[in-house]
Length: 555
Image 1 (cartoon, rainbow, N blue to C red):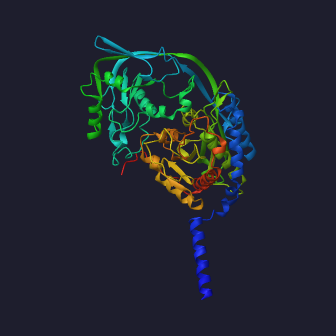
Image 2 (cartoon, rainbow, N blue to C red):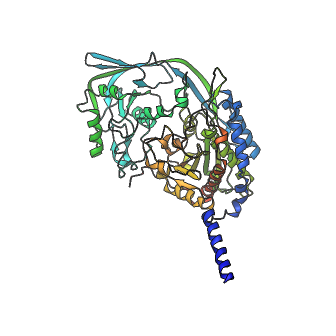
């Protein structure tokens, strides 16, 4: 009897221990194990402390602190043994892909919009109109309404069908049709790549428009983009405001403004329907309601108080693939190195440290460079390690690389992007009432972009059997926070590259001076970097890369 009781007790203890430890993890393949073990929590902690230190002054693009971060990343790539992936002005190998930028400050007091409706004029300035442009602008042109501003042949939808936008200013809604319908052709309730203002502006430009005016959807069930942005607080409220930046050779060369609801209603006075009725008609029948607006002309005046040129850099290092054929193909592992800088204050400088955003992602890419180079076995495809410039100013470094790729995008098989991989997701002013946050996020990682490549998602989830993170896809099914197009994977999605953003979620310190290194969950961050290592190995070695889905549908 004593033996039976003792045996039962030992069995209960063993089961309880196994349950406490969670499900058994799959073993890491032996050929990848050395690099996997090279990813160490202590190294990640030390690197985040450095990258988010006062000495780097918040890593503002075109400022000395960010330049120092760029030099550090390049030095770490060199120490790891990566090959320079770019060339300098003399044609020599370089770890720096130069990104030419224009920095400017708009003059809100002087800039404005005037509506000429018949013989009557009405004018507005900030805050009824928001936006700027790298050059001073004076435009007077007819106004046309272009619905959501979308041309999506694969979804059978075109707001410009039958509309001549040549030489006009076009007025468009934010987001996309039927966004609250899980069965919508536009990826159900999630955002597609057509929902972002840049894509709408490029589409308007392609149709001959001179400028774009964006208005919030009148029947929206979420804050407008401007209202959501203002909820963040922190660096969005800085005085003086942060300067704007743009690519010197950007593909987009027309201005984009956002107007308030009352201004939008006035602009649509000659539409023959209220703004609410126009949106309802589009949503009901999936039929565009675009039209010229009779007797309606607008004048845009934009001017800047300051304008200068500067040079930042994408930091790039290459691990050549081991297979003579597949080495020509590429897997990209990316993050961005900049943040929001510092502001002088009476008690000393206020520093936006950016430990999570995106010190965590920067050091994650560096850690993966060390891991892959320490591993005695190399993957078949080449891996391009990239830390982008000027993400906080509008994904400028990643848009630049997408326009000037160092390796062909057509043979780029996958991209893993790190942006904020170091914290536990927590309620904040930005997210309250807009998305549900799980009670325990200490082991949770958000994966963003799966709808454009279910194969990519399956590969990451298979690799996770060796890591054991809680994987979450909530942000692929919401449309209030615009998360899908808020980081550096997005320009590559626009170019049909399977890409996913690894993201631990928002928190109250997002874009505040309190985003500091002491708050980083380095244990979870270590697991995330290890998951990326195993996932990248599969992308770089499997027979076929993940397929890209051009127009993901809803349920």
